[in-house]
Length: 404
Image (cartoon, rainbow, N blue to C red):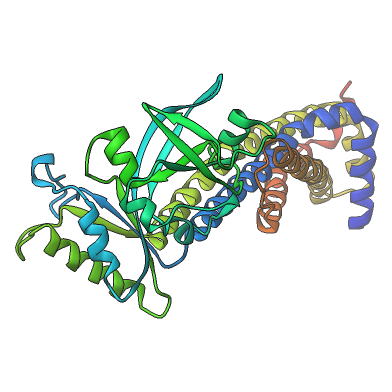
């Protein structure tokens, strides 16, 4: 039989029961849409996170107190020397280090008049804005004199500024943090939320010495961020930083570090691995819908064989061969899957675009994911269409003609 004739017969059979055909393909539509939308959203989230890490600088290093030893054990608090201002100064003296900043984190109520907000208060050094490529939109940032003198000055994030001052210009005005009054010298440019939805503009920046002296009452730092001069090799610079910190902390050659130095590349690599696993996991879960849809197609095709038994008997009686019947029903099954795949692809793209518009996250619609989902839907049609097709082809012509 002419293949085009088989396709035409299959197409007419599908059109004769439009509602049933649509319900049959619903599982495929849901499965393909789920695969494409989930892969697109997770891909976009990964790209967004990578972009945020990249904005910190490809040549950035982050130093934290504490270390997991080679044996897998975590150093006890008593064996760990905290990071201090002296460590920052020692690192800053390295020729390979272009910028270095201490970080001291806390949270506090920030009050202006009858308005107050509870927000993150981050103590930093003067180089913070250069390391993070994040600068004030209005006003200025604090300088080395402010840091050394633990000055009562602050820079507001965009959200805090709007919550406390609305449309007013806050530069030169005062806010109270804890028991102290700080003068506002700048407002940071907005950078928006993280992929998890945390508002990065809901923040107040102070000299880290002021945070240590007046808010947390400790000389230890949460971390140290470093920007390596692009003219130097990052790995070699990392080794220099580790060597300096070992000397600062009095660590002997046979002893483990009591700190960790990580590069942005390490964090990006970790995020990529997690994202890849998450994409595969979510894609696998979504693919279950395709399998369920395939089972639905098989069930309907079996029903179709029963309804068209006399038709099959007549075709066999006038000379049609078993393979012609098998091919016709197999084509019908694949057509149902491909139609469902096409609709599911369109729905998946629309869901991805809608999610991006609602959440503000970017989505990365992968052509590869569309092709894979589409081909998998065709494969589902073939796999789950074989049994009904074989059953139709195996009918006895005489018994089929007698069937009522």
